[in-house]
Image (cartoon, rainbow, N blue to C red; front, side, top):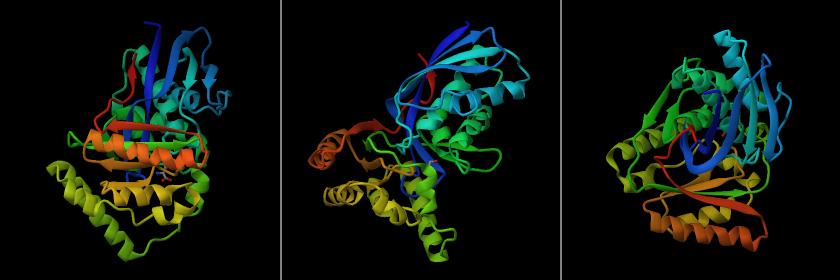
Length: 306
Ligand code: HSE
């Protein structure tokens, strides 16, 4: 095999209560990468279709991630990458992460899988650092593993794949506007009040318990974000309106996806997802804002070859 086509999914990070540590992948929506061995001795981005991202090998998240992996493996081979960039940068659904993950996964496959999935993570993160110096691993781990994950941001980036109740669905709305992660992090406080930290601990602990027990009532009660949502609400167009609709329709939760401007909700079955999605659609349509929207189960596949 000297070429491969890879699909790497978009993802929602934070998931209400897990700032920088929780994330899930979006079923069927993501970037595609065509990777082939070349005669050069480095990773080259040869073409990007779709949304605009840097073409320079030093600035593109896919080439930086892949090159760091080859350097680690001490491999001099070259690879050409063409990207179908379907995820808009600055979307809050893991655009830079998906391309970085796709590149390291694809090249690792072409090399006969010398590295395990967990080992790919730190190289994909080298790509993330090109787009944001303080990037956490939540989107990268989600694209790599699929499903719903918990990741730490220490050197080993340990990932836990969480169980997901069968009928849990997420609705994601992505207005086609751009918010840079770094700008969205700048509005956050540098320190946290102990009372707020304690609320957040109860929220994440309760959420994880509800995943194991399939208790949607507990999930609705406990799943809240005390750490970041309030600071970002004003910057995310229509979030307040969407959240009001979610609360009046008794959705399980509604929050900002990553650093915005995308937003997401959890609901307890597919029919509810369809109904609520059309109500959210109306908000964007009424305000003449272009958007994409998705419904996904929480057990979708991570990066894979096509
Ligand atoms: N979790 C990050 C944030 C975004 O909320 O700033 C994605 O890594």
